[in-house]
Amino acid sequence: MCLIHASSTGLRGRARAARVADMLSEIEIGRAEGHICCVMTQASLSSARRGADWLATAGLRPTRQRLALAALLVGDGQDRHVTAESLFEAAAAAGHKVSLATVYNTLAAFCAAGLMREITVDGSKSYFDTDMTDHPHFYWEEEARLSDAPAEQLEIARLPSAPEGAEIAKVDVVIRLRRR
Image (tube, rainbow, N blue to C red; front, side, top):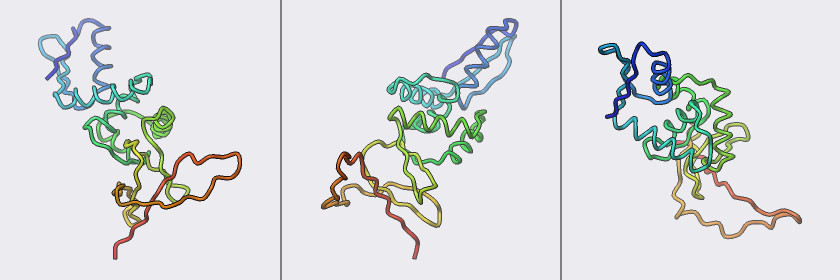
């Protein structure tokens, strides 16, 4: 557990404590003996640290919004598939103040930095994957949900040749599923 406190009489101390509280989730804020106290659980501290480290690997500036979204995406150490809308809802549920436009822009920045990849389904719906390894996906039509498919079961015997002056950059495999 980490305890951050600042004197309630000092404006800079209150502002610093408020900035820290804004940047990290799962923080309890209270007043005790003239101090503003922010208590972070070990889980929230490690989640925030994972998110900050993830941004640092790509050299991205750790803004408040990026830190909050990074902690939601990779803070628990698990890979995930999100849409901008689902990440926006998760951020709001966690108490982070971030606009949907900021979520879209941040996801684009994460993709451009090589932290995530975008998978487009039906030419209009985008999912974002934190797992950067080459692997296929299942798209569950009734649920509009993307999940990983077992890469070891996929065999692509041959690809068509790229047109002259072009090269194949990557191949995305999305297998559409519906329940029987």
